[in-house]
Image (tube, rainbow, N blue to C red; front, side, top):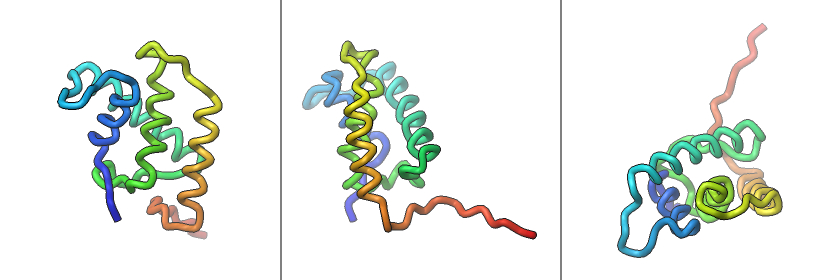
Length: 113
């Protein structure tokens, strides 16, 4: 199964935002901002029970397009684009469909007597 790293996801997001072009590297400020937002997005998706990114260096490729769109939507106001609730709802629904019935690798908490 193909995977992406968190940095590759951030680069894909920056490309969608227009902050990165082919052959360029992301500025340190943009990288830090998008990395922080990626952490917030991963936390939000885990808290909502949609999916849990267990390993930042092995994000399934099938998730990456939708995670990049969600991250670009989240970061949009900082880059001159409006945040769209519809984009959020649609992409979260797609992610839910992609992970249903599969292993989530979430840590299990045992419940003792």
